[in-house]
Amino acid sequence: MNEPIFLYDTTLRDGTQGENINFSADEKLNIAERLDDIGVHYIEGGWPGSNPKDIQFFDLARRTEFKQTKIAAFGATRRAGIAPEDDPNLQALLDSHTSVVTIFGKSWDLHVDRIMGNTLEENLEMIQDSVAYLKDQHREVIYDAEHFFDGFKDNREYACRTLIPAIRNGAAFIVLCDTNGGTLPHEIEQIIQDVYRWLEVELGAPLADRQVKFGIHAHNDCGMAVANSITAVRSGISMVQGTINGYGERCGNADLTSIIPIINTKLKRLSIPQENLARLRSLSRFVSETANLVPLNTRPFVGKSAFTHKGGVHVNAIMKLPRAYEHMNPETVGNTRRVLVSDLSGKSNIEYKAEEFGVKLDGNGHDSRQIVSKIKDLEQEGYQFDVADGSFKILAEKLTDQFKPLFELESFRVTIEKDKEQPCTAHATIKISVDNRNEITAAEGYGPVSALDNALRKALDRFYPDLDAMRLVDFKVRVIDGRVGTAAKVRVLIESRDQDQIWSTIGVSEDIIEASWQALADSFQYKLAYEDKIRSAK
Ligand SMILES: [Zn+2]
Image (cartoon, rainbow, N blue to C red; front, side):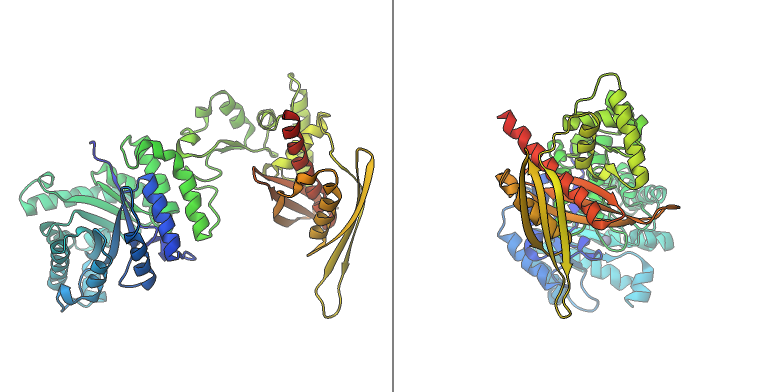
């Protein structure tokens, strides 16, 4: 049992079959290098026969030194009626100059007959010739038995028979594919056991005497891709194919960001080296950034919410003992524990958060009760503090007399001008005071909030010249349903960042400019307080 479960990543091939996923050759190389770093054994780079961009990737990959990962080129068995050496797709695989070639063949008689229009016998020859030819060219061959489980259910004998030419001709791995993703874990277990038995009888020797190993390639159409892969591991297979974040066609492929920690921490087997597990979250983020997709917060193990606690009872418990509400330590996979402050929150959340932000509370629970009660009122009005850490900190300081405003607003005026032929222009003038000294400035902007932001920045510059690194990175407006007797309100959320951190602030009002001002003012107060703390620590 010292051998690891071999991980075969197909993010760069099957992953790009997912809707809205496209990688350039350079992006593919960057991802491949990250996968190599973390210890993935095989990376399927693409299908050179079907996509010229993939040929470019294989050129780049050839000139790159990977630490341990092997790059695989992917393609189909030879076409019917031609010799392998005359098949352009097999030639494209060889021209990729990878040490590993993965070819898929048909296991389901329905596909052989009805879709491809070949005879069952001819299909077996196509598998045999292709594997033998690639082995002759000194490639490590991985054979993907496409639609294996569906084929087995329809015609058990034939599906099993298609594996024989691949095994006899030296494929290193036989990968059983649940291509349509409709198979359930108990079927996976049963079918793998049946296949082993069938093959042992047919080959007349225990499978263990042969070099060949088995693998699984699962799709997530029943939400079972990870469960099916793990079941296959428990049934004795040695390779799992999947993608980072489960990206892939339709509902995706088996998600390696779940499979890896399950193998390493729950099954206590080895996939990637244990010490690399802590880089899993950053790998997941890297791939979603490269794909330009918003990371899924609820993704098991690596999602932002995977170890996030909101209910007061839970928070109280994890403060005593994290294991009470966490199935594993978040740091193991590079994630972090988060506690949200919201209308579900009790005293424990507040105490946890206050400590995080350095807000001092009295020891007897009076402060935290007061904060909880205020937050509940404000959340009734439409505030939402679980997404606005920055405003939470300021509120907690205000309620405990620790808030030190680093500027005060005297007044502002925002005007919008629209000319018949011209787009709107926005102007803001603002008057603030810092230590009883006033400053009045004016600025323009792309819109009223941008004009206000620019004017405030200019006004503060005289007192706090180090605001340059601070930027507003996101601005969200949501209309909150008007309750009985009140007009509709808007909630404005602003996300800001500097070189060290990201923080969010919130404002709620019937007036969008007023709501924006609250969020904007909180954002600057938060940043200035942070700078002030650093200055006084020096
Ligand atoms: Zn697939």
